[in-house]
Image 1 (cartoon, helix red, strand yellow):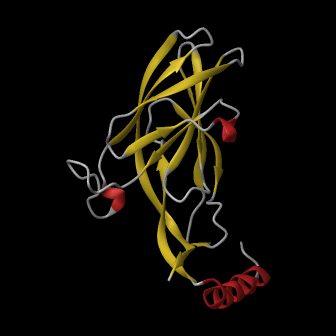
Image 2 (image 1 turned 180 degrees about the horizontal axis):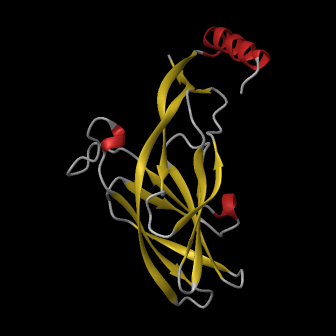
Length: 183
């Protein structure tokens, strides 16, 4: 719960920022990637969005674990990202890091490997409602955007592909966030 003091500070910031910076607050729905319906997945952590000005949100799964024959997959929802984003990594049952190599499907999702953010251990999957793809992937409302899946290979330390994964997910609305936009 936010305290009255935090609410007053947020209101003061909202009042002073536009004339000082040329930016104004904007409201948007907050969405995240949900993996709760994946067969065999376990929720390993629950939390809320990291946006400081977020309202009307519920606790959501932010960590998942999925055990496979030779490895364990770990998924971490990036609760501070502006769009639905999940970090994906893998480990052997002995605890050794495995590499995740994303497969681009051009279905509204893309992969990035940002070693400076993850020490090279995780890849980031970002879902974006890009409307210029064929067919468009953004029917209204966003949460009805249909079945989605992230695809990736799990690669061992010696470069051997240990598994090919296709993980279905849903894009779920969870409250509203305030962000600063140029006027």
